[in-house]
Image 1: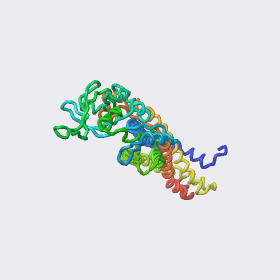
Image 2: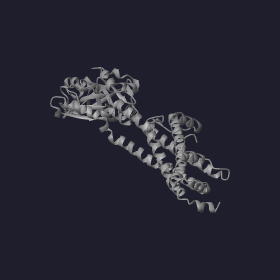
Image 3: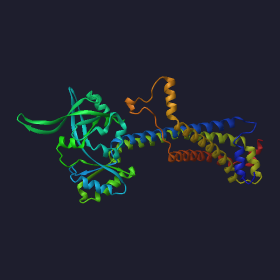
Image 4: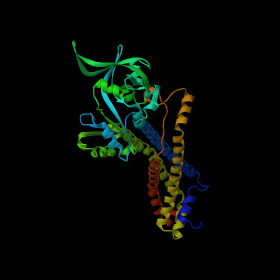
Length: 418
């Protein structure tokens, strides 16, 4: 046994049944396969959920900033000083001013409401990735006085316009005329169309040059606020609070961050992952229960061996450890195999989905419905440890009852039937 404890040696030998009963070895193999499949499915589902969450976060942050800072009346008049103070914070990477108001876009008989955001294109590239999602035109086409507009793809489709067409932006603020109060409006030329992959933005956002927005909404030198890009996006809330408190009259500012604006959405994803973990863990639990039946049959088959070991002086604790080692070995083999299969499938899930789509002649992920054509997956070490630890713990717990029954075997009773 070369220094190995006898419990380990005997438990390892019992993994493969003797020539009298090969059925038990078959059942042990089935237990390992069932456990491996359960662990693999659980890891793949959580990895796909992680990839979906990361992809959505990336798309959201491509349009929405990590954090925003504005005045209590949604006006920031001394924004240049506030921007300089924000950039002095060690966690702030960039700060871009913006003007955002509601507007109504009109093209002939097509009318649609949307948020109109005035930006500085060169600054916007520092706080978002919208310039990387342009389907037509360029974000840099938004220049002061050119009265150009960039629309989301769904919004452009609803208005039935493309690059080079014109739309009229109507705002709720009125202008006094001899005919009464008339809503203020301005004609803009469509110079670009973006597709962020999020219907909320593709359908409800239009971008114009900040100076043009200031003239349209008559905001003067003030802006709506600052969009901040921070080093640690998960600490965006704390960072923007520190920036606001560091300003003169810190109570005169409103702060917001991406985790707060989309908290319900990401909470739903986390809830889904938790529910799926519990449901699929039942599959692992069923496989772990199979270990009980396997060990019960092994104990029944090895009654004579147990009696001989007891007469040789092996205490009940030693007998218990023999069968615990056997069950734990089955659990360890099944868990490791499942984790390996799960990581392999999760790492190639997109290729596998494309192969199935080609073979079946269908498409599982329609971009018009799900806003993404691929099925992303992200394997996280925390999930690997959690799934592996939980599965192995269930397997170890499953060994206790059969091992306890084996340790209670009386040598005389067992040898009487041999």
